Amino acid sequence: MLRQIKNPINFIGNASANYQESNFSNNQYLSDYYIENASFFRLDNINLGYNWGKIMKGKASLRIAASVQNVFIITKYKGLDPENANDSGVDNNIYPRPRTFSLGFNLDF
Figure 1 (cartoon, rainbow, N blue to C red):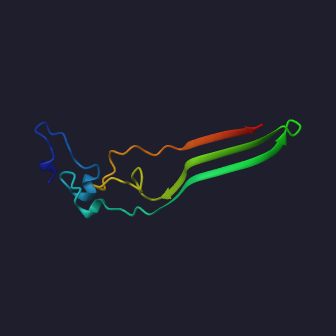
Figure 2: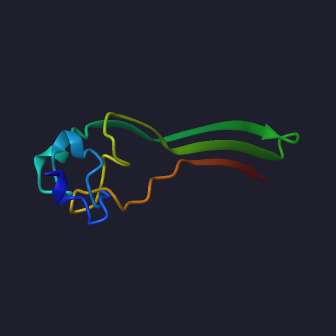
Figure 3: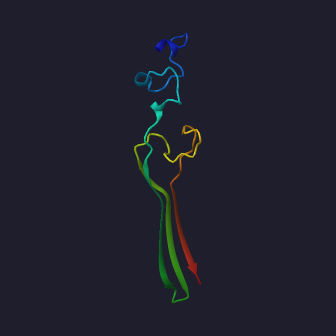
């Protein structure tokens, strides 16, 4: 079977990274070998705010807010994102979700 994936110069080309354990001569995406458990726990948003109250001798009020998006994910999934929206089910060309931090101050007069 190894002869099927070697080119004439005797280099392995277009082979699966786990050829030795799967015995696939090329990438066979329609096999159930590549299906894995994609269950996960994700904390997607955290928002915190604090109303400081009246400041500057009662002429203004201050509110401070902070938020984080895509805080963490707990999974045994080996791909980029277990919540893949791709219709084909192959997650080889998606952009990873960024973690975003925001801090805001609101001063009302």
